[in-house]
Length: 442
Image (cartoon, rainbow, N blue to C red; front, top):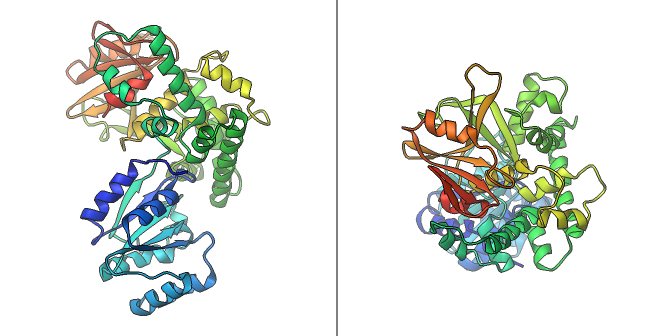
């Protein structure tokens, strides 16, 4: 089963405009579909292709790279070993899981310059220093980040009408509670399943949520194995597992000491490794939204979200052997006995991240008080910003975003309160259901 992925169109653009000068590196977390996308693209867009999976490549194929100085010999050996015929300017060579064999990545410079074939690399944990410290990173390499399936891709896979959301986004008045409840339930299905293609496939095939949850637990186990290859002590896994609990507490920033008792320079490096793994999404505090968000990014003050909300749901309930169908049923009907604002925050973080934007939030102290204001997400639009506050149910209190709009009035374009409620307005505050978000940031 193959799902349409937007990255396919980006690969077509690469082939048409850049493939003679650059290889493309598909990077992202494990199990987001990088290998499947690369091979499907090769089958559809080229006369032939060779797929070298370095997680299981034979010694004879690996030894082909000993002759990289003589590319005529290299290509002859490669074709013989793999049993494929390569055609000049009509064939693609895929280096799958290239981080496991950095020598192949270094060879890209010479292979691209040779010009006979095109090249796609796929990699997980690709930017970890451990994997590239002894090689020259090729400048002839374009990077494309592959994310878990976004809500549009998921909707198409399960047969939902995503196009109607675009029409709703342009409406000034609400669509009615009945329709809104149905659309919110559709969105909660996406939150429960997530965007990992293996989990989506199980859902499309009619598997129950207990089976889907087992698949997601297997993916989390794969991540943990990768983390232990970097740090055998298990501290990166602790940092990863701490994310839902820290968001649930509503703290101003992620605290490494909450996940690991002692903090030192090594702990900071582990955070960088975790972020590099693409399994999490960092959201940085912008100290002054009146100027560039990037230029005012506080590297010491950030929150962490999971790159896939479906995995987030599973991680929330990792304290039991498996998540029963009953829990998923309650999630879909919005009857879980908890304030799940942080779960919807993770959804919003994921929706913003898939647009290749860096995430930002803003906090500031209230006058004459120990309390503080916080705006959940900021998105830049030219010289101005859109501000978003996320609620799990209705509009509730929203002092922070109202005060933010007043304080930074010259720099704010729009302010939104995202919740499960229908479209509405409260003075300058735009009340929008969560499923509308992709159209607000496009």
